[in-house]
Image (cartoon, rainbow, N blue to C red; front, side, top):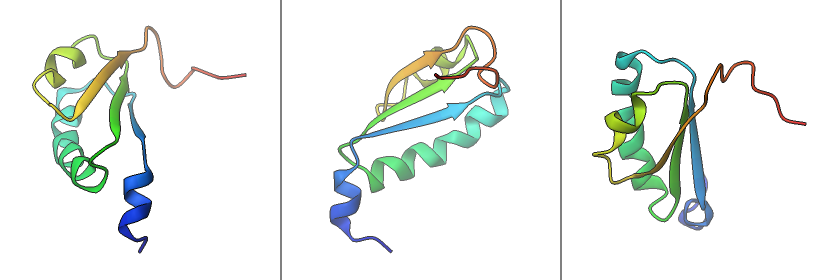
Length: 79
């Protein structure tokens, strides 16, 4: 198990959630809590295809940004 200095060095976390079902977003809530505990100084962003996600996660102080991908995340590619 890495020591605490490893966890404090993490600056950002990106959660990618290609599924737009509400139940899957509810399952992210325990993950957000744990990420805040493990990486207290990290920026936490969520990348999703759901237009409703910004409203769903607006009450979470742990989430810095909710990025909505127009189209399919699964088909997105980088060069």
